[in-house]
Length: 441
Image 1 (cartoon, rainbow, N blue to C red):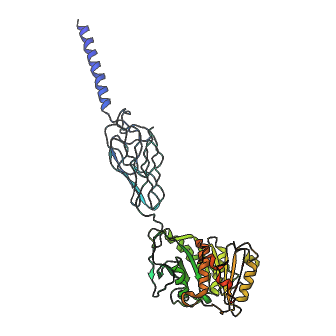
Image 2 (spheres, one colour):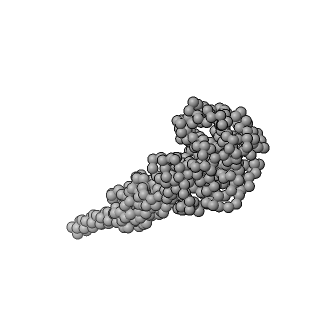
């Protein structure tokens, strides 16, 4: 009797022990199978790596799937969406703070939020348990979360970030010059300078209105004698700018000194004008710039008076140029290696046989007319510089402007191609003008 009583007692004790062990196991925190999160923390199971149980204990089953943290910020003020996190998180202890993906270039590391229930998937970071893609932050490259380790659930990253500027450099505001200019075109003209490297040695003539639907082609100009006075041909520059062109004349307002040109050093000849083009193109892409998306950087031209024409000729080295020309300037002594570089339409405007550049210009026209590029020649016996200094730059500028309208704006009317070729060409009918052309479409 006593033996049977002992056996029953032992049996009950054993059953109670098994029950206690099962309950204890159920209360232990399960190992989070998600991994580290992008910056931010979550309450829930301790983030493990590779599915190891956190804080000891066996991996628990159950636990809500981790949901992503509050919206992270990427780049400059970029906001990413919430990513859904990795593997199943057990109920229990606090997760560790994860360090996440690469910060977008130009911005700060994305920060995640706090989330109850498991691993936090934050913008720009890696949600352990799956690959999480962070939001794109304007101002840097898209932040992509690192590859997840552990867990089977793939975390999904947030939407593309929106917000701040692109961070494409800094901007130096231009300052009004102590000069004014105007023209016959529909735009008022602003004359200004800028202290940035690459433009600080030039003078800007531009339409006052910026930021509208019209995009202004770029035109660079070399002064006579290569002097550094950007106001030397104000009437001509103002006229061109008033018709919707972003003009940069070499030299500062009332600047002094001269550049020296050496035909054997083409790159050096064209360096100042190329620098102005570089700067204008860069400014057009900066949200902080007054010129942001106001320029047509696919349409660029160069010209120059006398020595300044040598600067324009060096544009044969620049593949961005649409056309170039010379005004009372020529190519005396140019070799075939120079002409082999000519790849765009060319305009000659000369001051007749009394112009010191006339013969050298004749050499250039003869050589270029043998190429496949369009070339036009206009000459009137007005002497060196012609009527460039007359009101609105005279006929020299009127011809040059029509040429720009034709090649940079596709104008084939009486203000463009129609003024220079065909039945509408008044200069072609005037015996005072010598007009010739080759390869004209």
